Image 1 (cartoon, rainbow, N blue to C red):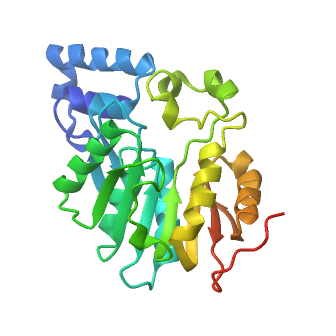
Image 2: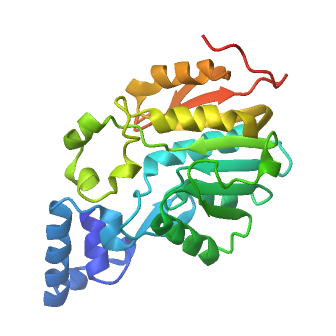
Length: 267
C-alpha cells in the first residue's frame, strides 16, 4: 500500500519511482496526506481511485462494496465451469461495482453476462468500467436479486455467481474499520439473525433460472461453507464441494442443478 500511495503522490507508477520522486517536498506532502487517510482506515482503492482485478484496471469510487482481490478465485472457478459451453449465460447477483461480471465478460467474450444489485451507485461504476473496456456483452440491472432478470432466461442460465453479503448483524462491529466505516451496511449483511438470508435467496430463487447442469458458485467465508452447502442441498442442488486458494482468503461453494433438471426433495 505504501508503495502505491507513494507512486500516486509522485504521479507515476510503482515501477518508475526514483529517488528524485521521493525527495520532492510536494510529493512528500501528498504522500503523508495519503498515508494519514490509509492509517485512518480508508480503503486503498478509494484513495487511488482504482484497483487491479484479474486483467482489468477498474476505476473505483466510494458508495459501493470495494472489489476484493479474493473474488478473483470466484471468477477463475466460474471460467473453469463454463469452459466448453457455447455462448454461456451468466448472472452475477449482488454485483456491487461489477468486478466479477466485468471480468467474466472480458474473459469469455461470447458470454451473455447480467449483473444485478439494489445500489444505483455501484451499478453506475460498473457501467462506466464496462464502457471503458468496450464490454458490450455485460448488462447491469438495478434489481432485487433476480427481480429484473428477463423471464426468457428462466431455465437457460449456465451459471449464477455471487459474492453475496453474509455477515451476521451482531458481528458487524467486529469488522475492520476500513470495512464497517467505509462500505454500505447492506453490502455486508442480509440483516437476518445469521446473516445468510441473501445467500438463501440467491440459492432458492436462482434455481429456476439455471438450465439442467447449470452451476451456482458463491463466495463465502470458509467457516460458513458447511452451512451454505446445506442450504444449497436443501434447495435441490447437487453439492459439488468447496474450493479455496493457497492463501485461504475466501472460499467458493459450488453446487449444480441436476442434469435431469429435477430438484431433490428438501430435507
